[in-house]
Image (cartoon, rainbow, N blue to C red):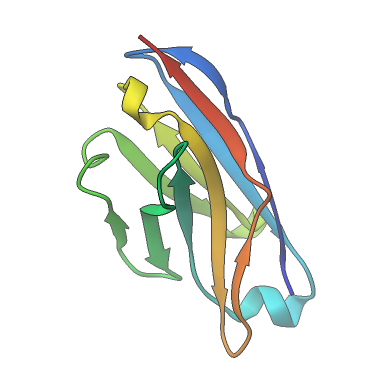
Amino acid sequence: QVQLVESGGGLVQAGGSLRLSCVASGSIFIINSINYMGWYRQAPGKQRELVAADATGGSTNYAESVKGRFTMSRDNAKNTIYLQMNSLKPEDTAVYYCWALINTLGSSWGQGTMVTVSS
């Protein structure tokens, strides 16, 4: 399997910005077998929801609630994806999880990083 390690969460005031990072590690075979990567989030008492995801080399899909504010990017040389979050709102408060879909192996998840947006 692949190991996913997130970083960059924290406390920010409404209107502020944060950038999350997720580093994927594992065998070269596993890394090259990743079909999709992205970000999910789970707010207290709510279901986990997709924030942004893309297929390797494909376009990114964003949740309607974050379009225009969040941008996902990749650095393939570093096996890293990023989530730049601007104009943060209190409703963006959640644990953010890095996700990867690996060919024939299924989904892998990071441990999550907490983002808290104060009003």
